[in-house]
Length: 142
Image (tube, rainbow, N blue to C red; front, side, top):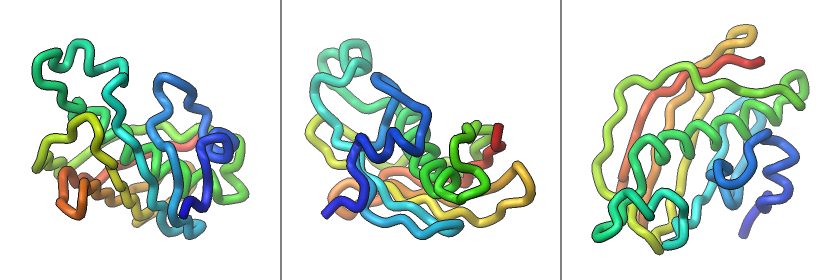
């Protein structure tokens, strides 16, 4: 059961269609972590060209989804409410499986360090319990 729906997520994140990559939030622990869901639909704009005969969600968009889930955890902190979290880096990124139309992408991003307007998080994404991507991400608050 969703803790936050898409409309509630838009109250936290500045992203809008077609670039809002989080459909639901299942868990949110302020200053710690967020667990979100992206329903990967066949009509997503990027499948028209990536790849028409064998649609695969681009890895960078999986990474962006992980960053947006982290931004929900970050921008839920009272002093950062209404601000923008800018994705500043990704390290140790590993894509392990393809994400295809019809998949439900479950993402957990844990905030591991926040220092002033900068921070780091650890993110993982799964489809049906199988790890599809993991990364360490960094961000700045603007």
